[in-house]
Length: 260
Ligand code: NAP
Image 1 (tube, rainbow, N blue to C red):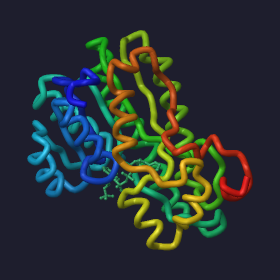
Image 2 (image 1 turned 120 degrees about the vertical axis):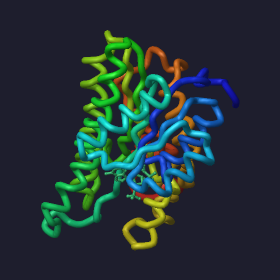
Image 3 (image 1 turned 180 degrees about the vertical axis):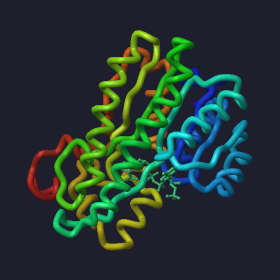
């Protein structure tokens, strides 16, 4: 699908690019011949990935730190000569615990990475995009932010807030030519999901039975939806959160889909 989305030459910063959805999105954008700048916590690992994908720069940092977000955007703009897009994938899962068992500092950390990190990254990118009257941002929400779940008391509400942030910022920036949307992945096979399955916090069999499409999703399926929202193919779409979940949110029945 080379060049099909018109992303060739677009200068795109991808956060969380060392793993999972961010890494796969960077791969898809590299195939589309976008000019890439990659960001993640692990700068050493990222440098190898940046070389492999032909990125023009990579930046280590922590998205909860305003100075790191500003620095990654500044580095991107210098290395690429500007910035047309941001895909914000940096994120963490929570401990998956009942409300009474949650340590509030741990809770705060999840909220900070998810909510504060998304706001800081989007705002830093928009400081370049709004004056140039052009840009597209895609953030990561989750189906956990669209439906209620027990034991996801930091991650779920923070992901709901990411969806609302996309709406609010779209209302503020659209007249400046900057679009912002979010993707709400369902259960996707990434290191984050594998870890939760290995720790017994997710039951893979139950997830498959509860998903209308009868399987987990792949990072590539999220990456392609993300690339669409980033590109001009979605030129009249802003402020939306798109579930990419094999029908998980659509299903309202009780128990396995097959039982109906
Ligand atoms: P992943 O494989 O763990 O990748 C996330 C990347 O973000 C990791 O490289 C991680 O580094 C990095 N990161 C974490 N905190 C950071 C910080 N403070 N500053 C900079 N980088 C940071 O996770 P994923 O499954 O691809 O998830 C990507 C996004 O999609 C997340 O926002 C996640 O909530 C969302 N999502 C995923 C799923 C799913 O099923 N996988 C479902 C719904 C939503 P470390 O490894 O060092 O932490």
